[in-house]
Length: 270
Ligand SMILES: [Ca+2]
Image (cartoon, rainbow, N blue to C red; front, side):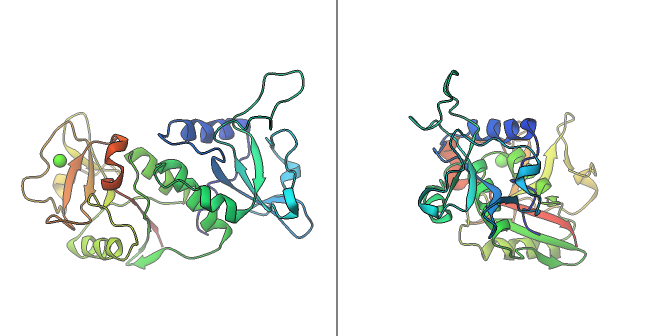
């Protein structure tokens, strides 16, 4: 199942964690992020793993879920305060980290693709509500490209971990070609292509995320790369003269590089 666990929130700690991710973004929308929370035919809310909401942690905003116009079937976490909406009597206004319920179509219009982590969370939540098998099989593994540019390597990795996988370790030219073909099939192909599961450690050498030294195996660096010890993460170029080849890059890029930034590629055992 794609993305099923991402937006299920079982505790205040997890709610706070997701909200802290949201707050770090350059652009935060009022409606924040989708949750994996849907109203079923019995008019009650269930998490997308079919757990009834009523039995667990909840953080509805005051007056929510209000099922406005009788058509609100999905849950979201607010990103910003709604004036006149969430004031709790006798307390300071609680305008953050609370849930609302809104319609799918309204929220998808609000989805802000310049907000990498939140956009990924939105995407994954939508994907999990609309069951689909986005994973593509190759050898003993499955791969998924989420073609949303992501400024931070750690955000891309976290997304893959939530989906039961991790960033890709590339073991052969055949696998590198397979991944590059996947990138080329996406709607959004950025210059920096996809993040790889390859990072520099304190010894300045590159290691795959399973701790195998890169030097012992296959590599596909673009000529002259890697070229900066301060660039501690690796990506595969998606476009340009280096397409399909690798480069070292900063693990956190400034928002001005959003449109170039690598998208998310996840790999997991089949
Ligand atoms: Ca570089």
